[in-house]
Image (cartoon, rainbow, N blue to C red; front, side):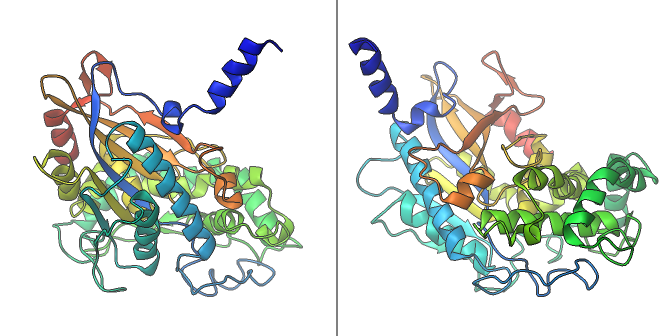
Length: 403
């Protein structure tokens, strides 16, 4: 190999991490960021995680209480903080030394609070960042405005919106029919030997009757399949031995394939605009404030849940595909990043990204300086600015988010 080739390779290896990020459109500079991020890896939220008969063997143990952030999940989140810091210092948004104004808001679950703490510690090391959150386990209407009655919500209208998105009254059953091969594979992982009394398909899929003030909910096979598929992902991402991931019967390819159940649940229940707007009623003002305040924090990070991510994706019609996950499935630690970009005249624009580690990167606690997380520009439907499709003016973005 020639000396010039060796030099070129060494320069490539030394390229700053931010060079691998999608560059802003020409003539625009990154000026502000608002990030809505899902918490890191946790165990199932209850024990046992699924009803009797869902699996033929006991579920694996976890090192923390149900629903809590694991030490492994905390370490993965810390790596994301270091990655984002590297990107934003290279872009001039954050200083390489010293502290600037950063705002972090977390839901009141242990996992969202600990995620925020882990992220803050590596995003701004040595700086004190006050994390705003209610006392642990005290419901927060910012993150659950429907459940807490903080927003007008017609459960019947929401049910109609879900059914419309599913293709009508028979749509939920049609989704189950379409995913029959995936249901069969999931049952084969859950149940050995296979038995009609074991698995997720004992009851047909449906949409629960509307209850005043309650979000729509799936019932039957699709509901249970979404839970089971998410558990398999979390087992894998946690770094459990493969003998414990689906009792040794699940592969990484299975986890990606079966993640369609989790993604479909959100497509049906969280992305329809009527539901999404209500579900985001507490977070939307934080996003607008973070992007428009004249002297606000340069970074606003909101530590929430997959439902929040899916609803924001629905409001803006955003779509992503992280390697190793199903399309539009919110990853542990995955985030929708909203960038404020400004031109030389001070005009502001908004660009959306999705940033996430892959399941393998979470599992192995990959060094983001060597293995860069997935980052993709997500065009915002209906926006065009500066001849860039999917780039919003600030006014158009606010209208899209709140109309």
